[in-house]
Length: 109
Image (cartoon, rainbow, N blue to C red; front, side):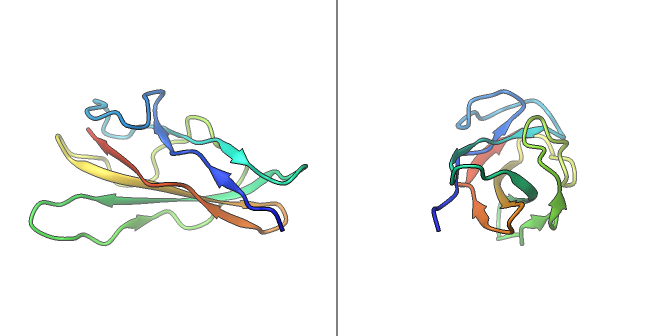
């Protein structure tokens, strides 16, 4: 089976390496860079890990959400605080249930 590869998720329409996006609930977008011919997204999951000063915080996970949405998807996690850094990861499933994950993306509000 051919692999499914995602690009790094983006917040609003900012570049993936942007720090200081100015949004408490940024909308997310991602693109599928490589997929088998005819593959279509059937579901996705968003994972948000907050970079808490002084300790690791377990990542927040949306759970599997059915749908092909991948452009300006509403922020599924609790709102970000001022100067809070986070890492966003998106996982997608095809209509055939094949899964793929995105590279991690860091963002600071």
